Amino acid sequence: MPLTTVNGELLVCQFPQAKALEESTNGLTVVRSPVSCMDAAVSKEYGGIIIFFSTPLISERESLIELCAHLNSNTLTRSIHKCLSLEYQHRHFMVKLKEVGVKYVDIKNTSEAANPRRIWERLNAEDSALRIESHLSRLCPFLRYRPISEQNELITCGAYRNRMVLGGRRLHEVCQAATYLHCEYYLNPRAVE
Image (tube, rainbow, N blue to C red):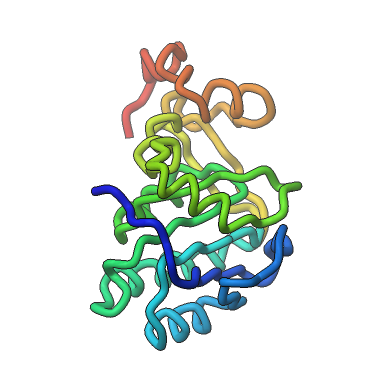
């Protein structure tokens, strides 16, 4: 379904640790918490909702999932087009977001400033790279995450019985890219979980 160009305001939700907006906030309503985002979304009609989520706190992910679930189930907000902007790829997190109805995700560089209008232009142009399925198709289904602190997780390979810790080049160039389809562990898993 093609998106219509936004004539009204965009609602921009930036979680507390998100980067500052790149441009002026004219035509944007900016809020800084999930509660204020939901409150604003139901109190006025917006052309679209862009959510910037960049907090490193693992516990905050549930707040975002809950917000997205409410936005997608509420009769006042379910038909409004929404896009999340995340600073990292995380298969388990994206699967949960998809389960609550998230359709569009933008992965941005951590050094970039937030630019909601650029994301909205890409969404209106039907950029397939924003579809959550596109991101999930590039993330190996054998990625496993185990929290080791409030901000860090141990990422292991489930196809290698969680004995291989993933990070650096292998994680970014194989496990979080379509090249995982050629990975020897993906093709011949030692243990299916």
